[in-house]
Amino acid sequence: MSDTHGSDSRERGFGTRAVHAGQSFDPTTGAVIPPVHFSTTYAQDGIGGLRQGYEYGRSGNPTRTALETQLAALEGAQHALSFSSGLAAEDALLRAALAPGDEVLLGNDVYGGTYRLLSRVLGGWGVKLRVVDMSDLDAVAAAIAERAPQIVWVETPSNPMLRITDIAGLARLGHDAGALVVVDNTFASPALQQPLALGADVVVHSTTKYLGGHSDVVGGALVLNDDALYEKAKFLQFAVGAVSGPLDAWLTTRGIKTLELRMRRHSESAQRIAEHLSADPRVAAVHYPGLPGHPGHALAASQMSGFGGIVSLELADAAAARRFAESTRLFQLAESLGGVESLMNYPDEMTHASVRGTELAVPERLVRLSVGIESVEDLLADLDAALAGL
Ligand SMILES: *Cc1c(COP(=O)(O)O)cnc(C)c1O
Image (cartoon, rainbow, N blue to C red):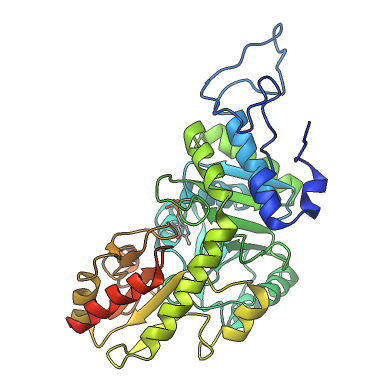
């Protein structure tokens, strides 16, 4: 039996772990792809006689277990938990780690939904929030010196400004103050960045994006090593119930098998596009960590193994940005990112509408591209045609 679970899977290469971890063939039939387990309940061999611990679909499901094993292996971690969305994963983590009166120190351009969850949901339960530019470690140190938070929460590269934060440096600052250091690794994915290895305590993913990779399943995950925090979050996963459904878990597992290949292609094409747009006088600014002029370029090169598939650009003004966003044909105007198809986003009114007028507001002349895996010449031609129409 090819057992790809357990500690030895951590020593294998990333591509091997992505394909095999949690994916042992079905022992009954030999099916190379494990079946999708739709059953909501499990027959007991006498009262309490559970087979492999499975009892009821909210508390556990073999297809979800397979995904959780795979997710943990991708980051060489002890534990992973899979949820029905990225925000459900975040909610479980925040409630597992915080008590009323506790404070979260948050990056100033995190995902708008994270800010909304903290400010408008958990805020009502006494959780406090402070915002700082995490790419500026002096500013972070000053904020921590003023008052130690319980959690330091960062996204790097950030959304949509693509700022880069020094994860190892941030982890040291956070740990000196006794804080839990959380990295939302959605943009880089584990194929390009391994925050736990850099010193972070917990990784959060919206698996809706690159991990799933095909824009056909919403999901989220927590990946961590701490046993006690894992048990608390797992209890909330069970007691609150925002679990991945079996088909969602299976689709995510299938997506993950090609993650490394996709991320390489996303990164190569995004680099070409960022360089091309930088040379265009109609484009006021390009934000991409792969560009040598990007303020976080050297840092990104040292803590990531590729610069990712997201490129943001600024046009002359808001009107030009809106016109540009509405005139590409291959880049479809839609929320979300990380799928095989290229997407165009106007953050101010789409993904970041919930942070308009707050300290997380984004420039009105900014558009964000999620560069897909199509032929890059076609993507360049599409962008050029849209620029020509301005
Ligand atoms: C999409 C996203 C989330 C939220 O995930 P959902 O799956 O939509 O709940 C969190 N963080 C980042 C960086 C995201 O892009």
